Image 1 (cartoon, rainbow over the protein chains, first blue to last red):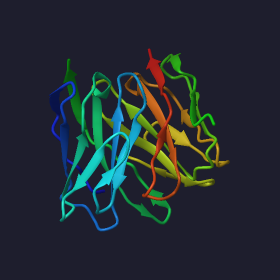
Image 2: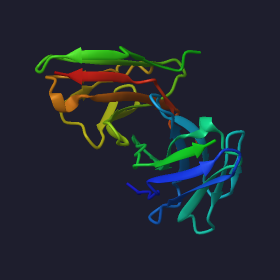
Image 3: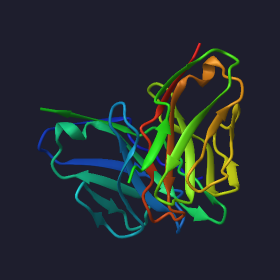
Image 4: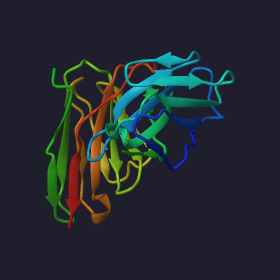
Length: 112
Length: 113
């Protein structure tokens, strides 16, 4: 299973942009890059995913390096509610197997 | 649309007891999985299923059994509970493609004494 590497923690001030990095040097051509976040005492929730091109949605943007060996989740204006653990995951589907393997994630602290 | 529903939300077991954690989804998802999360740690995959009648082991399967007789339900059975199984358990489901999001339940907090 392809692995991801993320910093243990990051800090931001409210209303500032946040760039959360993820390295995935062993990514294969069919792996999608997914991001989830987990708020305190809740289950993980989906944030965004992509394959090769940069992606935007109402929650965040995902910037994918040209060689796909790294990606960055961008929160354009951090709020206190964005304080969570953010997980970068590679997801690949093959016949009769489909694993979502979580790493340790990045704990984001947001200060007022 | 209820999403992914886990029951119970909290449970206390004595060592050696058995129990079943329930997980149900109403989105017709083929893929379902169980994770455990220990304090301060990430999620570890216990078992997963890509469809009714098909299950496979994840990273930490020992001490747990699963079966998938219907698309909607994916119960997790603890055969003989041990204190090391004290954890928060999450169930997830999604369509069977890597180009889609997974949905998670709110978790079951299990304490084995």
